[in-house]
Amino acid sequence: MKVSDLTIDEFKKLIGEAVDEKFREFLFDPDDGLELRDEVEQRLKASLASKERISFEEVKTMKGVWAAVGRLRNS
Image 1 (cartoon, rainbow, N blue to C red):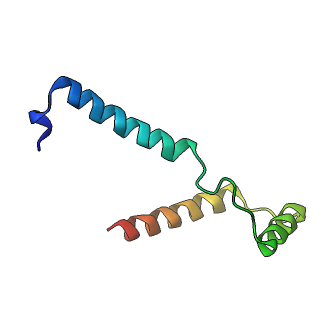
Image 2: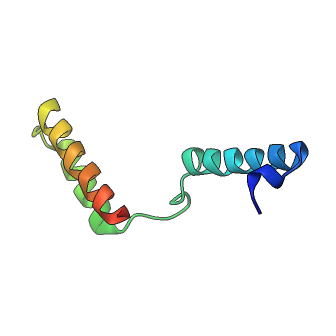
């Protein structure tokens, strides 16, 4: 079926469902209710206690690397 074959009401419903789905992806945490493994909790606590920090420039570089990885995975 083509979009051009839909009635206005069918098209509105389709768009509404797509918007709802995107909102769910952005607003809801899929890990909600799950517990952290002890080793992960300990690593997080150690990280928070550490004085070592990453500069903004390093974060921007890492963001670019991960974006490239994501693009490779999706191609």
